[in-house]
Amino acid sequence: MQKRSVRDFLNIILNGTALGVVAGLIPNAVLSTLFKYLGKHFAANVFTTLSQAMYLLQFSIPVLVGMIVGQMLKFKPLESAVLGATVLAASGSLTFNANLKAYTGVPMGDLFNVMLITAIGAIAISLVKDKFGSVTIIFLPITGGLVAALGLVTLPYMRSLTNLLGQIIFKFTTLQPILMCILITMSFAFLIVTPVSTVAMGLILFKNANYVGAGAATLGLVAAAAVLSIGTFRAKSKGASIAIILGAIKLMMPNCARRPQLFLPILTTAAITGLSGYFLGIQGTHESAGFGIIGLIGPTKAYEMNPGSLVQIILAFFVIPFTVAFLADRLYSDVLKLYKPEVYRPENY
Image (cartoon, rainbow, N blue to C red):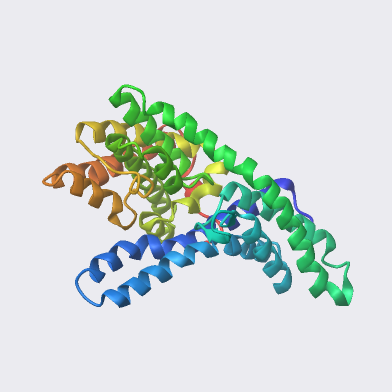
């Protein structure tokens, strides 16, 4: 690994994580709802198999992150493969269940730990990769295993970060409904461009039948997607703009980390969208809270819970967030001159 500044190295970790997450999540995010619908009408076995394949791709995310970061760091194939395997083992995607006496899995794992072990693993591999000579193929994977063991030690502490954020947001659910909706919408709009899984957060927070809060969380993701899709379109990254609409919002994690000013239009749009969502009666469940408009899961669930609310759903999920996002982006970019449109352009996409 050639010499790089700390900033460049961290930027590679962020970009690699974003690309790995998008590559693993997009197929299921885009096609799961369609396959479930088609499977109810014909060829159920075929579409069940297709749905399972799309879902299982999500388990590859830790490996993809490690491999992509390895490629960005100019690692050799074996070195990238070892980094990918190391990240998978330490990600929390696969854990031992003592009650079942078997390993069980959850897609993606803990992204905080994924990023931490990707960084540590990349440094470790770069330090030892030229030291083993002809026995590199033996000792380099062993080195990866040792780093993975360290990752299993750090995993509970990284998970505690997510739990802490969950506890903070849970306090919002006890507030007056209008304020609750605004704060939850802003929180989820923020979380979607961080390593936190909004799907997991939604499952944790809204099992208490807080349908209004779950609806607000869903709109938070819509607000973030609206701002970032409009911004990337302005930055002449039309492919990224479409990908964001389809669910690749975490693609923009590096951009938001480098330019925190981007949170201004995101949070502004989220606040207004959350407020409108309350008055329009948008609801959701713990299963839909972390998805937004991905696969139309959010709008579909809102309609199921309130049949006949098609106009309100179109306003809340499409008209209001995208209109406000357009105006907010122009305000902060063109009027206040806080950033240029180019800051939305993703790297390595």
